Length: 113
Length: 109
Image (cartoon, rainbow over all chains, first blue to last red; front, side, top):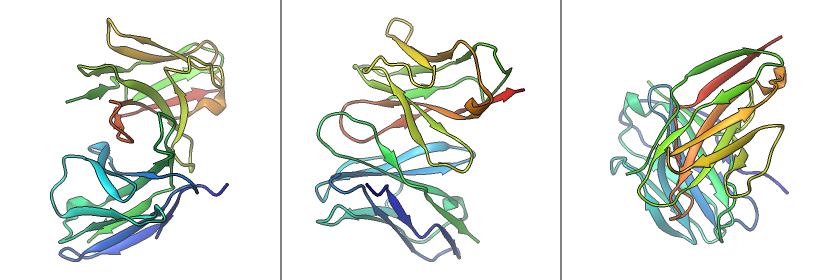
């Protein structure tokens, strides 16, 4: 079974630009969550999508948004990038039925200059 | 709001020594607790969770609801245990983990 795939692996953007990150969950998994990892704040929950609907949302500004498609693939978008958005963005998938382990992708390293 | 605290950022032990990575949490309900591990250049992966009450790679963790703790223990550390360890809480509302700050475990030969 293929694991969680995140693309691209690395990104460099300029302040003020926007960026879209992609996550393909494990086949059959319907829940995708996104996390931001920084040295200062650690791992922080951004949002979760289940069956194309946002089910939970973390404490991030509205510049951070996401969506999920009918094939469970998910994208997150960050608009008007700030230097502080530089981070490793991780997505995690799980079946969405009952409580099981979350499977993480390798992450997308975003650098804002 | 829930919170997970891992008081040690770095824990350094010698091979064969016992290891205890501390985790305390605050949450008003009955959460699920997990330990995730990240080995060098690998993705974050589940080590164990409290509901399964199993031992993985010699590690165990007991949920103490009175002390709101979920410490990770191993009686004899191995060099391959060197990694970053994260304690996490899931309140039961979905795929929404709250992570502690992480503890880097270094096992010296």
